[in-house]
Length: 176
Image (tube, rainbow, N blue to C red):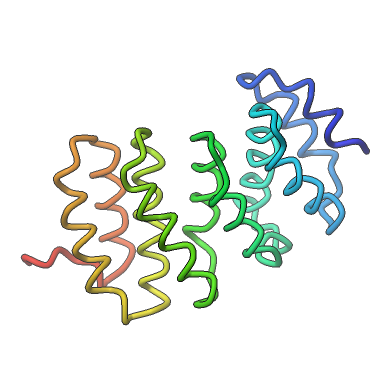
């Protein structure tokens, strides 16, 4: 199956072609590698299509996703389009990130906290919280970030922070 050729028919809006590709694509190392390579292609629609499928695999509990965490982080670090960033953040927010990778990821997350797109900002907080859940030494710093986020003007960012605080017992507001 030629994933790249199939993704070229994606118009950037209608996901029916992505649904079809997802349904027929073998979930193996070769497909995963090809989707990750396409995620860094110079064509934005191809990037979005491939990361949409990767996120779908993750949402469906595909275990192969967790075998390439460093590559997902690299895609996020180099992503220039908000939908690609969002897909990568949504994946990384719910998987265990090794400490050696978390250090590099935190730098990118800090930059994303000032991103124009409110959904990217919100999910960057979620990845920070996931890291904090795995590494208690950075929780104080993350709590401070969450407190600051509640002053963000975007309701979606505040909603994401509320979800984080519900999910992690250590993430309760510092004033409570």
